[in-house]
Structure formats: C-alpha cells, structure tokens
Length: 360
Ligand SMILES: NC(=O)c1ccc[n+]([C@@H]2O[C@H](COP(=O)([O-])OP(=O)(O)OC[C@H]3O[C@@H](n4cnc5c(N)ncnc54)[C@H](O)[C@@H]3O)[C@@H](O)[C@H]2O)c1
Ligand SMILES: O=P(O)(O)OC[C@@H](O)CO
Ligand SMILES: [Zn+2]
Image (cartoon, rainbow, N blue to C red; front, side, top):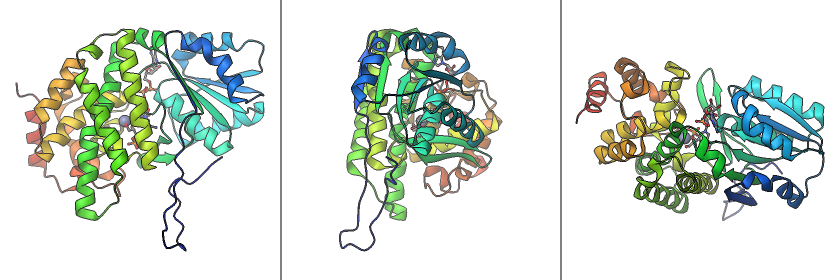
C-alpha cells in the first residue's frame, strides 16, 4: 500500500506518525537468482509480471531471469535514464500488460524506476541488483532526473531483494568500487545532517544516523577485502548497501546517506552527464565535503584509493574547472537540504579544495 511515510498527525498531543517500509524477503548469495520463482510463490503475488531491465543487463542477467520465469505471464520492458517521461512510459507498459508484480533486474536506474512505478500503480516489486553499485537496492526513496536537477521522491521499497553474489562478482570492479564510495559518502552525509540539526534545527534520527555511520565504518574496515572482484567482496558490499538503504527507510528520507557530497554528485552529473558513475561522483564529493568540514579528508581518500575508486577529477575524466563549478553550484540541488556546500563557498575556496585533491 502507498503511504506518506512522513505523515504527521497534527491534532494529537504526541503528533508523530511514521510508516517505515522494509523489504520482506532478502536473499543474498551464490546462485540466489535460482530462488526467484520460489520467492514469487512465497510472496503470494500471482499474475502478470513486468520484467524491467537495462539494455545491457537484459541481454545477460535479465535473459536468465526470463528463463527462470518460463511458464508465467511475463512482459519485458527496457529502461534508460530515469526521468518522469520514462516513468510514465513504464507505467503505461505495466498497465497495458495488467502487471501485478515488477521484477527489476539491473543497476540503480532500473531499480529506482521500478520503485516509483510500483509506488504509483500500487503494485509490488522485486529488486534484483546486477551490480553492487549504489545503496538504492533496498531503500524507499528514488532519485529522479528533472530539469532542476535530481529530486529524491518517495517510492516503494522492494518486497523482496535477490542479490546473486555470483552475478555481482562478474560485473566490472568499477561498479563495486562505486557502490563502496556511495557507502563511504555516509560519513559526510551524517556530518551534514548533524550540522543542519545544529544550525537550522532540522530533526535528526539517531537510529538512522548510527546505522548509516556503522555501515560506512564496517565497509572501510573491510576495504582490502572489497578491493577484489570476488563473491566475498560482493557479499560484504551488498550487506552494506542493504544496511544503508534501511537507514534511509528508518529516516523516511535519503538524509542519512545523502548530504552535500550527493548534491555535488548530482550537479556534476548535470554538468558532465554520463561521465562518472553515481557512486564515483559521490566518493569525490565526500573527500571535498570532509575537507570543507575540516575532517580527515585524507583518510577518506586513502579508503577510496584502497578500494580502487577515483579520487580526483582527472581520475573521473572531468576537468578541474568542471569540478570547481560543481562545488560552487551543489547548493542549487535540493536547496532545502542544508549541508556544508550551502555555507557560501567562495570560488577561491573551491579552487583550493580541488587543488588539494592532487596533494600526495
Ligand atoms: N534510491 C536510492 O536510494 C538510490 C541510492 C543510490 C543511487 N541511486 C540512483 O541509482 C543510479 C546509480 O546507479 P548505478 O551506478 O547502478 O547506475 P546505472 O543504473 O546507470 O548502472 C551503471 C551501468 O552499469 C551497468 N551494469 C549493471 N550491472 C552490470 C553487470 N552485471 N555487468 C555489466 N554492466 C552492468 C549498466 O548497464 C549501466 O551501464 C542513479 O540514478 C542514482 O541516483 C538511488
Ligand atoms: O536522495 P539522493 O541524493 O538521490 O540519495 C539517495 C542515494 O543516492 C544515497 O546514496
Ligand atoms: Zn548515493
């Protein structure tokens, strides 16, 4: 059922009420894909299925899932960028097929699209991440691209998650490293949330904040293990991505995992579309955010390097000027979310932080 998970009952003395929606079945491990038919039966959702995937992932994992669903009514649909137009197109396809369940097989964009469509149509969906590249695999939020930049919208968390570590370990290491960077971003997301709490009085959830922080700490502790592209690394990173998603579900917003470093990343995506993976841009934003907070930015950089994630604009294939621009204009993204990037950074300061990224 769709819910406004930040609903406040104004007429009560104790006036808070929040729905925290969580996944019901989470299956992680080798050959987890084979469990999909059993999971669908266990969920008790019978009827036409919409199999959603990306152009690349449909040819590989998507095709395997289609094979596993043989004998059931399945319609396939490919998704590209996540925009409101694209969401509408997928909604129309789901309606036309009379779908009662979406199975989303792919990266973050495919899963976010499924989340919004299933929310809007009030049908369920199963999340089948093909890469450990983002922490949206379990969250109840989706990030949609609009002309005004990325917006974070309420969405439906998956009823089930099927993360096959064998599949994830065969994805390029770049994707796994990006997922790690998306988790390391939690360090500055938390600092920004606490800063906003102190300066603007924004409410904070200690549980969400603590879960987000511990998740990043455990990941960094395992940095050497996740620098490999094997199933152990996939296992560790998927658990971190899941945990971070749950922190977002507890908070009812992406706040525990998305601060100024994400605003920077979303602006960078607008200035240089498609150049960096989401997590890669967030990792760079985390080093910058930590520098601006006066924290251990070199420690963040060391962790990202150990994992194999980019740490400079050059690594990402963007110019220093574009990076400076993204630092200065990050505040245009989601202006209501106060972060260290919203404190009036001068061009001089932005140039200085970008130059510092190259310090040995
Ligand atoms: N809702 C949330 O809480 C949340 C959290 C983090 C990120 N996001 C969103 O997710 C998106 C980023 O996710 P992403 O980095 O996965 O991007 P993506 O979905 O664009 O995938 C990146 C690339 O990886 C490829 N890929 C995926 N699996 C593969 C595999 N097994 N082998 C080879 N290639 C594979 C895809 O084809 C694509 O080209 C952004 O839109 C971001 O805003 C949302
Ligand atoms: O709200 P946004 O900024 O899309 O953040 C969600 C997710 O990317 C956090 O890792
Ligand atoms: Zn993210």
